[in-house]
Length: 149
Image (cartoon, rainbow, N blue to C red; front, side, top):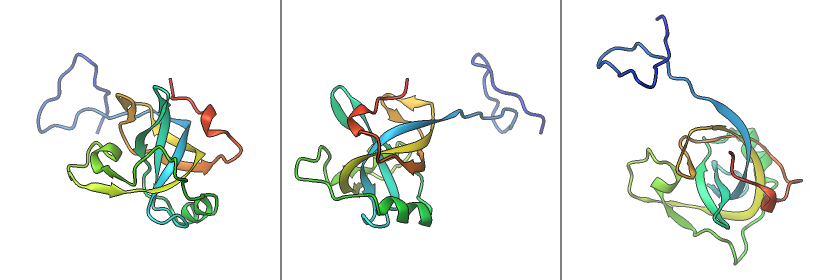
């Protein structure tokens, strides 16, 4: 297929694949204050950013590879009693495409900075798509993380 990128003023024509979808990803730091799955071998991170003075959930990661899960799990500590997030959240908070109206169980952890690859498109203050975990950044202060511009 010869590819073209759709212009903002152009419309899609049903049943035809005539445009290429381009996504721009950037590397950003987020705060991991919860994971999905066990503390020692998390399945995914729950990413947070400071918004309006509070640490807000802004998305989740794609499933972690086994080696990354093991390494990250070795750096996580259980969340304390003053943790800002609940133990359960509506699934839509973590994945806007999740039609399941159910809830997702979170394993709360002490906040740690993690570097992720993220689609720069956001919906409101949340990542539009799952982020991709790159590495933990325990040398950074979670309070110094800022939302991407």
